[in-house]
Length: 96
Image 1 (tube, rainbow, N blue to C red):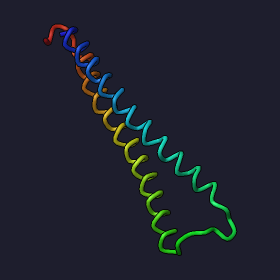
Image 2 (tube, rainbow, N blue to C red):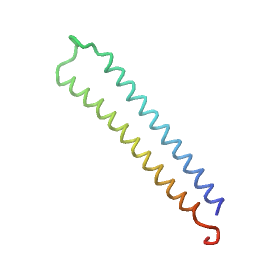
Image 3 (cartoon, rainbow, N blue to C red):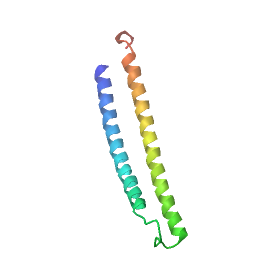
Image 4 (tube, rainbow, N blue to C red):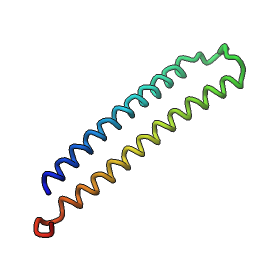
């Protein structure tokens, strides 16, 4: 039983590492977009109009919201996986 739990923990750790890599990539995209927004001059910006500015702003907002949603999904996945592990660890050996 202990071997199965160890194997399950190893697989969970690997999958969570991959999820963390994906989130890191999304974080870097969001940070870069925020840097680009910060570099926009406050006076006389040369945009193609209000529609283009609104479209780009919405795109950045969506990316940030997607990143935050991914963080929440990652947290839920961690909680679900850890709940299963704790249930297995708390079962006494006599009950197996």
